[in-house]
Length: 175
Image 1 (cartoon, helix red, strand yellow):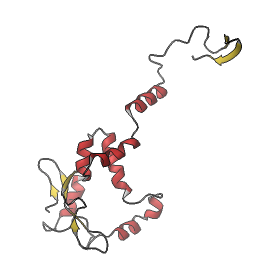
Image 2 (cartoon, helix red, strand yellow):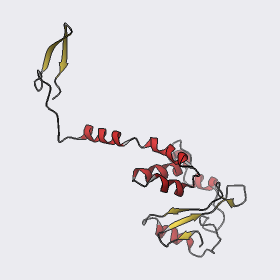
Image 3 (cartoon, rainbow, N blue to C red):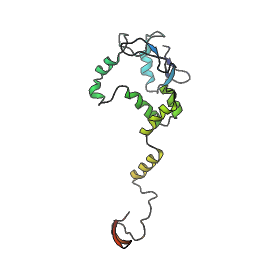
């Protein structure tokens, strides 16, 4: 099977596609790309290649017929299991998961087959920033490591009164 590459690392070579009702054609960007296969997926893909010729499509029905999107969505009961998402959204999910796992943007760009890094950068906003992650870590920290001392004039568990600009202000203690 020509589309399964195992050296130097396992992956699929995406060089053509076939949309339901259309002929097989080259990819949108007219360039082939290599998409990695995780160790837990590789044996499944290897099994799919059994009995296939070099130029056969990898994803087919059990009888070797072209696997169409409509059949997949019916089999998966996608209207219920997809929860309002499109099947194509799985592609976007993959990009976000790769980025969240620390795969650099340039590598994800190549795996997705994007011509521009700007297209891949669109996925980054789903992940938040390092500051978001650090802030959430602090919010979730139950060990109170590095907790700051309460400001002067406050006592733990009590409300304090302060004068500010000739007005009474009541605020809870911070600790």
